[in-house]
Figure 1 (cartoon, rainbow, N blue to C red):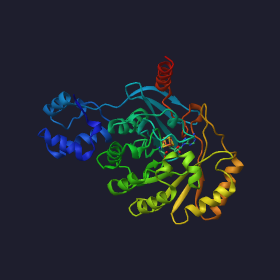
Figure 2: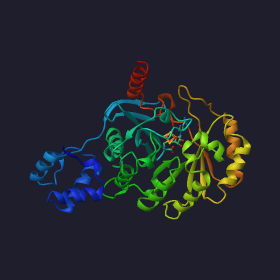
Figure 3: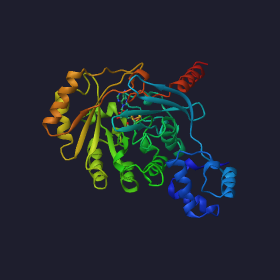
Figure 4: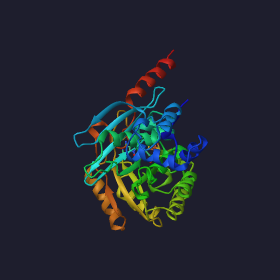
Length: 360
Ligand code: SAH
Ligand code: SF4
């Protein structure tokens, strides 16, 4: 089988070229073609000898996931549904803003963690994405959107907040991160790349040691009792352990705070006393809060808190000197908002299949 070069992080690319009798600088040249120029055709790599181009055509390929569908929201948010084989689909969302473009990438097809308010969780776990499938989302988005007038790629920030738990697909996630950061590839600063996790404590420590980037924690509850229900992995890594892991992470992080994401669920976690309990919980952790209005999906057992409640909650946190933002809902008319990603097309058919099998 041909080697998909998108699966190789910079060090692995160099090793692969060495295995094939090629000098390390060849690996760098090819990385630059793929990521800096967005090239996927070996014939166009004009500073490689023709014999090397021919050899690469024989043994390698540059293959991103296939796009099944593309949608654009009224606010300019774009969403691509990518086929990742064997009946699975994942989604990637591009959010344009003044002066930057953020790509929200997926790391798994489905998710095993089954948070109570998340549509990805509701479909269960299908499989981990490969490095090529993760970095391929960035490659694809840049390719589709085209370079800006200033010659730069439109994706300036990446958040791993699409489908799946990035830290439960650790190796591929880290390889993809290295491709985002490397100067021969996208060269993004560590502060512009964010991993979002529901709190897989041991993997947070590994990320800190192996590839520290900006960190967001899906907190969603001020105490273990509620978080055990909303974010079931809390039963394994409860809040005190999570807070300690945040502090350890900050020792090596590119930013001096973690971002706590907090989805606002009406009547569940949005009361003033919840905000006050949160303040106590995070007392020792340098942090910012990002309040996310709950994005409903079919069969969701929750409602979105009203704006007044959200603002009041923010004000309580702000009064305790915690910088708090309310996330703007983007792309909800194409179900591209946080927690709505479900890779619907394929999943529905698979689900139907499962139901059919179960009823036999
Ligand atoms: N698995 C990782 C990253 C993907 S989820 C994590 O949980 O952090 C990205 C963010 O969307 C998380 O903060 C998640 O809690 C939030 N989210 C999930 N479902 C949501 C919904 N229905 N409405 C709003 N935010 C949601
Ligand atoms: Fe998985 Fe994150 Fe959804 Fe929880 S919120 S089910 S960890 S994708």
